[in-house]
Image (cartoon, rainbow, N blue to C red; front, side, top):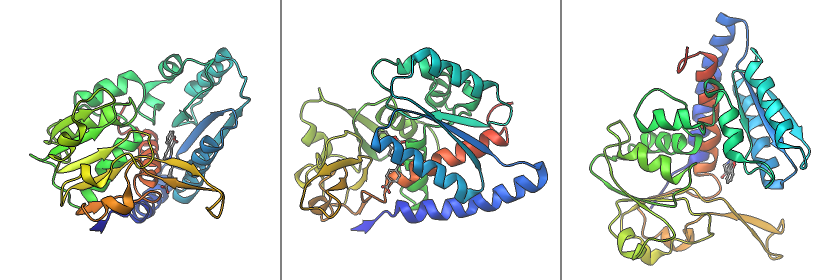
Length: 293
Ligand code: BQF
């Protein structure tokens, strides 16, 4: 088994990006600028936004964090989005998900100018992704494709089984891997909670992408010898026996599956850091106007 070290690859890419940002700053006289809106005080969301702000500093971006109270109205959030859409110094921005229940995520996503949608969640970017047109790719699928490239993992003609059909991971990564492209040309099976015989489907996979959101869901008897396993899950498990009272685990039962897999991503330190890198690369593309205008 070989570990796919997302943390190391993310550090490598951020270091390269930092040099490109230095050159951009010299020629343009400004720094790329990412903004993030965080509504409420969900601890996981605060940690994720913190990771993004920290990475901005590492690569030489400006960042602005806009914190709104948990009971902020949908209208107030839409107003903040309008201000960021119209602010010429903001290259791209994100609204950290999930949002409180009284706010409609679809409405919020549609309000973001697609040219500043560096999360790639706007249906305009999603549609362009599905058609293979230049766009902002959603950060996690983008990060996964970068890992596949970095480890020279061939996808052409391979059977990829994706578990989970979310708008943010499962659905878009299925589309990307099945398209004609460098990390595409795979035969993709998209499985979900209504799938029958998941185990028999998984046993036919060359590559498994687990994006379910259930800790340790993928067991070793669901993985064939030599398969490549990409674990997208980030689940916090609480127990008094852990040093900080909790630990992060993936959707894959790593301690057992590691003996079956030829390559596997750990949690933490696998896909997670690559998600943040995907966001940084999108923001730089937005600053350079590489995708739109
Ligand atoms: C790591 C996310 C579920 C729902 C909303 C590094 C991150 C996580 C883990 C991170 C995630 C998960 C993010 C590690 C951003 C990935 O070392 O393993 C970084 O910050 N992520 C998010 O913004 O929203 C989520 C998962």
